[in-house]
Image 1 (tube, rainbow, N blue to C red):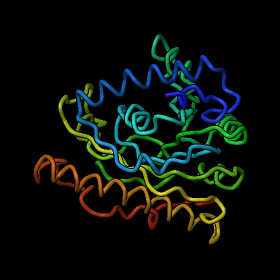
Image 2 (image 1 turned 30 degrees about the vertical axis):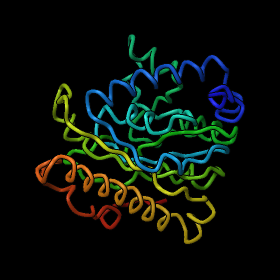
Image 3 (image 1 turned 180 degrees about the vertical axis):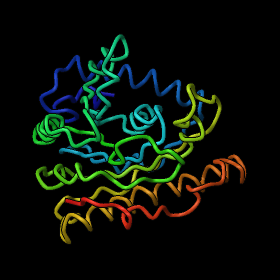
Image 4 (image 1 turned 180 degrees about the horizontal axis):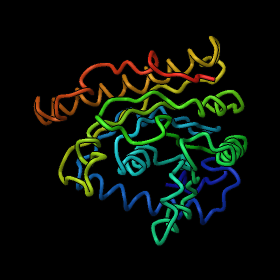
Length: 250
């Protein structure tokens, strides 16, 4: 239990009370996501206990930051969030948890500088490189803005795949569908030097493949748990041909 108090290791330089507040919120939301959506997490032990981490995840629903947080436990992150969410009580809450407001499609220079500062300090940042929630359950091409974080930070990349969250709360729905099951798998960490060895475009393709493979493995486990009809058959059943049609790899 003492490891929870190791703020200098978990989030170097962040105030002790800020990290404890993150822990409290994560614990409460984790209970909700387990009870209401039967979350199962695989690969949590792969997350490095020290050093800067860039968590890279697909984005299926508003539930995703809670799902990612439930998976992480030990290394709190600062997530990117759309600027319009920083309003009212909810805006105050996510700001207190360190969320970084993004203007536009994810290439906002100010938020990229803030993310780089976090990583340079040895802390963790969560990004959704698709830039927005999926419209159909598949994986959309990653935005080129993440390339700046890859090139200019020394962070270890931790890929994550989420599945079931689109069925639980699709983009087209105004509220979640309770009791739909969700899964997350944490992939093997990737050193940024290895990732960039063949250039940025290939690094982007590799990240997309890694995240989509994890997502599809979660999909298979959900089908084993819930039957062949869940998640609902569709685009997400096969590997998503993401990078071939995208532009601006930068």
